[in-house]
Image 1: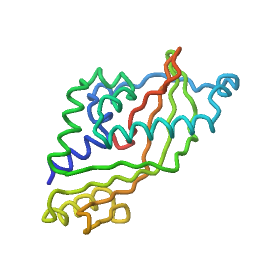
Image 2: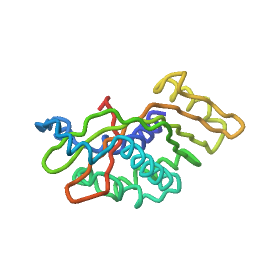
Image 3: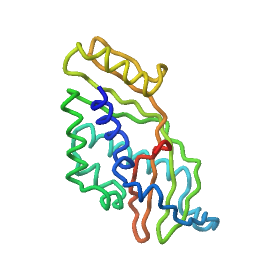
Image 4: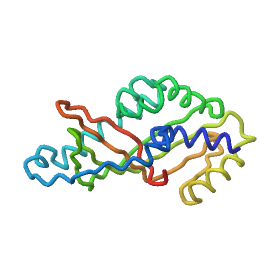
Length: 194
Protein backbone atom coordinates (compact mmCIF):
# COMPACT_ATOMS: atom_id res chain seq x y z
CA UNK A 1 0.00 0.00 0.00
CA UNK A 2 2.88 2.38 0.75
CA UNK A 3 4.32 1.77 -2.72
CA UNK A 4 1.02 2.73 -4.33
CA UNK A 5 0.84 5.89 -2.28
CA UNK A 6 4.41 6.73 -3.25
CA UNK A 7 3.63 6.36 -6.95
CA UNK A 8 0.60 8.63 -6.58
CA UNK A 9 2.63 11.15 -4.68
CA UNK A 10 5.25 11.15 -7.44
CA UNK A 11 2.61 11.60 -10.08
CA UNK A 12 0.81 14.46 -8.37
CA UNK A 13 3.89 16.40 -7.51
CA UNK A 14 6.53 14.89 -9.72
CA UNK A 15 8.12 18.20 -10.25
CA UNK A 16 8.86 18.70 -6.59
CA UNK A 17 9.56 15.09 -5.71
CA UNK A 18 12.45 14.73 -8.11
CA UNK A 19 14.35 17.73 -6.82
CA UNK A 20 17.37 16.86 -4.76
CA UNK A 21 17.89 18.09 -1.23
CA UNK A 22 20.31 20.67 -2.58
CA UNK A 23 17.44 22.29 -4.50
CA UNK A 24 15.37 22.47 -1.31
CA UNK A 25 18.29 24.15 0.45
CA UNK A 26 18.78 26.61 -2.41
CA UNK A 27 17.30 29.95 -1.40
CA UNK A 28 17.88 32.54 -4.11
CA UNK A 29 17.57 36.18 -3.22
CA UNK A 30 14.47 37.38 -5.00
CA UNK A 31 13.29 40.91 -5.48
CA UNK A 32 9.60 41.55 -5.76
CA UNK A 33 8.75 43.40 -8.92
CA UNK A 34 7.11 46.73 -8.18
CA UNK A 35 7.15 48.40 -11.56
CA UNK A 36 3.58 49.12 -12.62
CA UNK A 37 4.74 49.15 -16.23
CA UNK A 38 6.02 45.60 -15.90
CA UNK A 39 2.92 44.41 -14.05
CA UNK A 40 0.56 46.01 -16.58
CA UNK A 41 2.08 43.71 -19.20
CA UNK A 42 0.68 40.82 -17.16
CA UNK A 43 -2.93 41.87 -16.50
CA UNK A 44 -4.38 39.49 -13.89
CA UNK A 45 -7.43 38.65 -16.00
CA UNK A 46 -5.22 37.84 -18.99
CA UNK A 47 -2.95 35.72 -16.79
CA UNK A 48 -5.88 33.70 -15.49
CA UNK A 49 -7.07 33.11 -19.08
CA UNK A 50 -3.57 32.06 -20.12
CA UNK A 51 -3.08 29.79 -17.11
CA UNK A 52 -6.51 28.26 -17.73
CA UNK A 53 -5.73 27.51 -21.41
CA UNK A 54 -2.34 26.06 -20.53
CA UNK A 55 -3.65 24.00 -17.63
CA UNK A 56 -6.45 22.58 -19.80
CA UNK A 57 -3.91 21.64 -22.49
CA UNK A 58 -1.58 20.10 -19.91
CA UNK A 59 -4.34 18.08 -18.25
CA UNK A 60 -5.73 16.90 -21.58
CA UNK A 61 -2.26 15.70 -22.56
CA UNK A 62 -1.81 14.00 -19.18
CA UNK A 63 -5.24 12.37 -19.35
CA UNK A 64 -4.33 10.99 -22.78
CA UNK A 65 -0.86 9.96 -21.55
CA UNK A 66 0.75 12.29 -24.07
CA UNK A 67 3.69 12.97 -21.79
CA UNK A 68 5.73 14.89 -24.39
CA UNK A 69 3.14 17.67 -24.54
CA UNK A 70 2.86 17.81 -20.75
CA UNK A 71 6.63 17.87 -20.31
CA UNK A 72 7.07 20.54 -23.00
CA UNK A 73 5.00 22.79 -20.75
CA UNK A 74 7.17 22.02 -17.74
CA UNK A 75 9.73 24.45 -16.34
CA UNK A 76 12.96 23.14 -17.94
CA UNK A 77 15.07 23.42 -14.76
CA UNK A 78 13.25 20.30 -13.57
CA UNK A 79 15.23 18.30 -16.10
CA UNK A 80 18.45 19.27 -14.33
CA UNK A 81 17.28 16.92 -11.57
CA UNK A 82 15.53 14.15 -13.51
CA UNK A 83 15.48 13.19 -17.15
CA UNK A 84 12.30 13.30 -19.18
CA UNK A 85 12.59 9.55 -19.59
CA UNK A 86 12.71 9.02 -15.80
CA UNK A 87 9.69 11.27 -15.31
CA UNK A 88 7.72 9.46 -18.03
CA UNK A 89 8.62 6.14 -16.40
CA UNK A 90 7.23 7.43 -13.09
CA UNK A 91 4.03 8.57 -14.81
CA UNK A 92 3.58 5.24 -16.55
CA UNK A 93 4.22 3.31 -13.34
CA UNK A 94 0.95 4.69 -11.95
CA UNK A 95 -0.94 2.59 -14.49
CA UNK A 96 0.45 -0.61 -13.02
CA UNK A 97 -1.96 0.02 -10.14
CA UNK A 98 -4.74 1.96 -11.84
CA UNK A 99 -6.68 1.25 -15.00
CA UNK A 100 -7.17 4.95 -15.58
CA UNK A 101 -6.55 8.33 -14.04
CA UNK A 102 -8.26 11.54 -15.07
CA UNK A 103 -7.35 15.05 -13.94
CA UNK A 104 -9.67 18.05 -13.97
CA UNK A 105 -9.17 21.67 -12.94
CA UNK A 106 -11.53 24.55 -12.30
CA UNK A 107 -11.75 27.91 -10.59
CA UNK A 108 -8.22 29.18 -11.30
CA UNK A 109 -7.20 31.97 -8.91
CA UNK A 110 -4.18 34.26 -9.20
CA UNK A 111 -3.43 36.58 -6.30
CA UNK A 112 0.32 36.17 -5.97
CA UNK A 113 2.92 38.75 -6.94
CA UNK A 114 5.05 38.38 -10.02
CA UNK A 115 8.67 38.05 -8.95
CA UNK A 116 11.48 39.05 -11.27
CA UNK A 117 14.68 37.05 -10.82
CA UNK A 118 17.62 36.65 -13.19
CA UNK A 119 15.66 37.48 -16.32
CA UNK A 120 12.67 35.31 -15.45
CA UNK A 121 9.28 36.07 -13.99
CA UNK A 122 7.80 33.74 -11.38
CA UNK A 123 4.30 33.61 -9.96
CA UNK A 124 1.97 31.05 -8.48
CA UNK A 125 -1.71 30.32 -9.01
CA UNK A 126 -4.19 28.05 -7.31
CA UNK A 127 -7.08 26.01 -8.63
CA UNK A 128 -9.52 23.33 -7.61
CA UNK A 129 -8.43 19.91 -8.83
CA UNK A 130 -10.31 16.68 -9.15
CA UNK A 131 -8.41 13.44 -9.67
CA UNK A 132 -10.29 10.26 -10.51
CA UNK A 133 -8.53 6.92 -10.18
CA UNK A 134 -10.22 3.89 -11.70
CA UNK A 135 -9.00 0.64 -10.21
CA UNK A 136 -8.57 -2.66 -12.01
CA UNK A 137 -10.52 -4.64 -9.44
CA UNK A 138 -12.99 -3.84 -6.73
CA UNK A 139 -11.11 -5.88 -4.13
CA UNK A 140 -8.63 -3.05 -3.56
CA UNK A 141 -11.20 -0.23 -3.55
CA UNK A 142 -11.69 -0.11 0.23
CA UNK A 143 -7.97 -0.30 0.96
CA UNK A 144 -7.20 2.48 -1.51
CA UNK A 145 -10.03 4.60 -0.14
CA UNK A 146 -8.57 4.25 3.37
CA UNK A 147 -5.12 5.23 2.14
CA UNK A 148 -6.37 8.28 0.26
CA UNK A 149 -8.70 9.28 3.10
CA UNK A 150 -5.81 9.17 5.56
CA UNK A 151 -3.58 11.13 3.18
CA UNK A 152 -6.00 13.79 1.88
CA UNK A 153 -8.75 13.89 4.50
CA UNK A 154 -12.17 12.30 4.59
CA UNK A 155 -13.92 15.37 3.15
CA UNK A 156 -11.66 15.34 0.08
CA UNK A 157 -12.05 11.70 -0.95
CA UNK A 158 -15.09 9.92 -2.39
CA UNK A 159 -15.73 6.39 -3.63
CA UNK A 160 -17.70 5.55 -6.77
CA UNK A 161 -18.45 1.85 -6.45
CA UNK A 162 -20.33 1.75 -9.76
CA UNK A 163 -17.23 2.81 -11.72
CA UNK A 164 -14.78 1.26 -9.23
CA UNK A 165 -13.18 4.68 -8.77
CA UNK A 166 -11.82 6.96 -6.11
CA UNK A 167 -12.22 10.71 -6.52
CA UNK A 168 -9.96 13.20 -4.77
CA UNK A 169 -10.83 16.91 -4.61
CA UNK A 170 -8.05 19.30 -3.62
CA UNK A 171 -6.90 22.85 -3.80
CA UNK A 172 -3.76 22.70 -5.93
CA UNK A 173 -1.01 25.18 -6.74
CA UNK A 174 1.13 25.72 -9.81
CA UNK A 175 4.33 27.72 -10.17
CA UNK A 176 4.40 29.63 -13.47
CA UNK A 177 7.70 30.81 -14.99
CA UNK A 178 8.18 33.16 -17.93
CA UNK A 179 11.66 33.50 -19.36
CA UNK A 180 12.84 36.70 -21.03
CA UNK A 181 12.12 36.81 -24.76
CA UNK A 182 9.43 34.16 -24.43
CA UNK A 183 5.66 34.35 -24.51
CA UNK A 184 5.15 30.80 -23.23
CA UNK A 185 4.80 30.21 -19.52
CA UNK A 186 6.31 27.00 -18.15
CA UNK A 187 4.94 25.24 -15.08
CA UNK A 188 5.74 23.16 -12.02
CA UNK A 189 3.29 21.69 -9.57
CA UNK A 190 3.69 23.49 -6.24
CA UNK A 191 3.53 21.68 -2.91
CA UNK A 192 4.11 23.60 0.33
CA UNK A 193 4.82 20.35 2.16
CA UNK A 194 8.06 19.74 0.27
